[in-house]
Amino acid sequence: MFRQSATKLFSPLRRRTFPSYSFCSQVHDDLGIRSTGTSMVKPSSPTPRHLAEFKLSLIDNYVPPLYTAFIFFYPGGGGGGGGGEGVLGVLKSSLAQALTRFYPLAGRLSRSGGPDSIPIIRCDDEGVPFATAVAGPSSMDRLLSRPPEIDALHRFLPFRPCLVGTPAGLESAPQLAVKATVFPCGGVAVGVCFLHKIGDGYTISSFLKLWAALARGGGDEQEVGGGGAAYAHDRAAASLFPARHEDALPAARDFIYEGGEGAETERTTVARRFVFDREAVAKLKLGARSEWVPNPTRFEAVSGLLWKSAVSATATALALDGKAGSVPGGAPRFSDAAAGGAQREELDRGARRVLHAEAGSRRREGRVSRNEATRTEMLARAGRSGRSKVAYFVMSSTFGMDVYGVDFGWGKPAWVSLAELPDEMNNVVGLINGPDGAGVEAWIFMHERELSILEEDPEILAYAKNNPSVL
Image (tube, rainbow, N blue to C red; front, side, top):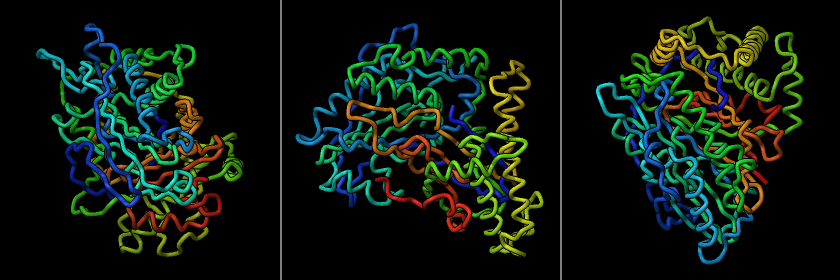
């Protein structure tokens, strides 16, 4: 799974409409990106009939039905001339081979038959949508040599990442979709969207490694770490945590919804990208040491700083709106002395608690309860928390995925980008490796008011650059 921690923020929740599913809108934009078509890539070999149903676990069933995305930029992709037909052919044929081993990614969500109908993936090789496009005259090097336009990156994806709002929408939604954009200079951008049901971090990483290895002409079991065996752990999960007949979509939706009586409905989530280089990360790790966490990881050091700044930004926004007195949990009132000594000490203590909780989580890793009542209550609490008056600040790390090791035969990507999240996904941080493997890119998704305060926090700016160029 993606590494995640959820920390309470002192801010009221807000309700949003849960959108319906829409797919593959055509995009024509100022980057000159022109769609050239969409085809369906099916597994190169039919999935055996005894594998036609892939059972979801109880946990999979409660995962919010949203798409996560990555965009890989390859300046030396060899895509120049003829619209990159050769490169596109290699990508499609190797994808078809990879889907033979990762066959559930070519299926669709459904339900098993009978009175005890449970959620499954129908592995009937419906396929993966593969969109293609060509870029305008600008080279990829030119694109990467200036600060990225965060709001424009979805143009390199088959569709905008979204939440799937209805059971009917889920049953037509692909588990995976791809878009390849070819630049006249020969560069290639490969955008992938995974439905975050079975598309967890381990599965995505294993699949991308296999697909890239097959494109290079490799793909043996040793090179990709087991290939299709990646689904063995998922089948074990369905046994340990069997799915129930009840529809989990409402509970998953409650966890995402920003509820709250009389709350605003038109606030939009925006994104910012902050880059911590290796020297800044080393300084943060040194400063984050404590008796609880003597050797903090990159995740702990960076997330502790961002959590502290997020609490400060949220409290300041509430104070400016005249709502500071309603902040639950006794949060510091920054209207009295914004970022003053006492408040800063309180936030420092809070950041240390985050690091301590993360260390405790690592110690508890791997302990799985088989008790049915415990599992059910755990998920019920998660659903109730989505309807509470306390928000959650979620941090997700892809540090263990080796995204810069995804080499289709053109060398390592110059940049691996995240992408926007649906508006419903507020107060989220995605951490991803920098190109050198030691730095960190932090993608922060918050409401614009709070984020405009956070991006001026001098402590963050002392360690990170706000959306610098990639090259």
